[in-house]
Amino acid sequence: MLTTLWLRLGAFLGKTLLWLLGIGLLGWALSTAWFAWQHKGPVPDQEQIAPGEAAMTQDIIQTAIRIVDQHREGTRYLRDAHAKAHGCVMAEVQVPSDLPAPLRQGVFAEPGKTWQATIRLSNGNAYPQFDSLRDARGMAIKLLNVPGKQLLADRQSQGEQDFVMFNHPNFFVSDVAEYRQNVAAQADGKKAMAFFPSLDPRTWQIRHLFIALATLSPPPASPTQTTYFSVSPYKFGEANAKFRVAPDPDSCPGYTLPPQNQDLPNFLRSALNQQLSTDRVPACFVLQIQRQDPSKYMPIEDTSIEWQESDAPFETVARIKVPAQDFDTPKLNLACDNQSFNPWFGIEAHRPIGGINRLRKAVYEAVSDYRHRRNAEVE
Image 1 (tube, rainbow, N blue to C red):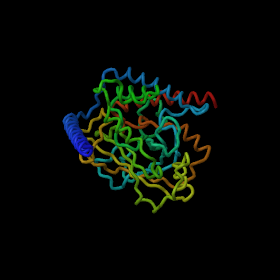
Image 2 (image 1 turned 45 degrees about the vertical axis):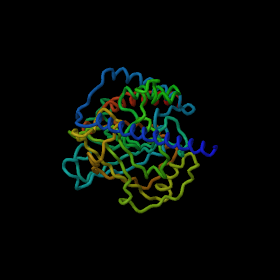
Image 3 (image 1 turned 120 degrees about the horizontal axis):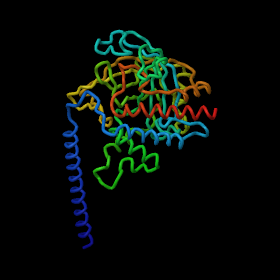
Image 4 (image 1 turned 60 degrees about the vertical axis):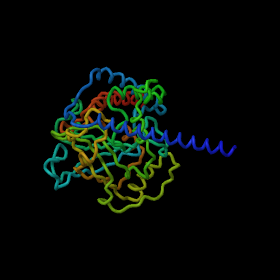
C-alpha cells in the first residue's frame, strides 16, 4: 500500500512539473511574441524629448551628488560611477588609409590620420571594490588636439573628442524616467525597488533586471581582453550610430598574459601593468561603428534595446594601439583621477543623441564640477 501511495504521489508530482513546464514555455513564447510585436521597426531617426525630462534630470543630479557624498574615500570625492580606474594610458588611434567614403565623418574624415589619445580603463561601481567582484568594466577614450568647434561653449580651447563605453551592448534602463527611479532606489539602499518599484506587476522591470545582471559580469583576465560598447547613440555625420571597441590581437605582437592572482584587490591594474610596463608588449583594438537603419527596430530613445548586428553590422573606422609604457605612478594616477571624460566633450559630427545622453550632459557637468570643487577645498 505504501508503495502504491508513493507511486501515485510520484506520478502526481511528475504531471504537476510537466504542467508547470508547459505553462512556463507558453508564457515564454507569448512574452517573446509580445516583445517582438511591440519592438519592431520602423523607428524615428530624430530625437524625441519626453515631457518633464528637464525636471527629472534635476532630480537625478541631486541624487548623483548624494552618491558622490556617500562614496567619498576619506576626504577625496570620487566619481558617481566608474570610480575605480585600472589606469590611464596613452594610445594612438589611426584611421585606415582605405576607409570607405561614407565612413569618413568627423574625426575619421582623413584616411591615414593618427590621433594621440588618452584611455581610462575602470570598474563601473560607484565605490572602489575588489576587481574579483561582478561589475561593469569601462573604457573612456579622449582624442587630443581635435580641431573644430566643441559642443560645450566652455570647452572651446580643449580640442578633444571623447568616446565613453562599457562592456555590455545595452543599458538596464530605457529612458530618463526609468533612470531616475532606478538610481534613487539604489541611493536609498533599496536595490530591490530599482526593478520592482511597487507591488503592481505591471511596473516590474524583469527584462531590465536580466540586463543589469548580465552587465555585472565576472572580471576579465585583463582590461585589454574586453569588448566595450557606447550603449547610447551618437551622430556620425548625417547618420546615427553606436560605437564599439574590440580587442584586435592580430595587429599587435603575440602575447600571453601570465596568470594573475585574482584574489588581489587590484589584479586588473596588475594585469595591465604586467603587459604594458613589465613585459613591454602593446595592446591593440579596433574602433567600430554600427549605423542606424530606421527601417529596423533600432531606437534612439531606448537604450535598453540592443541594435542587432543582423540589422546593421559593425564597421571598423579606426585601429587603436596602446604602446608599452609606465602608467602606474602616483603622479599619473592622480592625474588620471582628476581627468574628466564626457561624451559631450567633442564636435558636432559625433554629438550624443537620445534621452540618456541628454541626461549625461547635465549630470556629468554637475557632478564633475561638484567633485573637483570639493577636492580642491581639501587639497
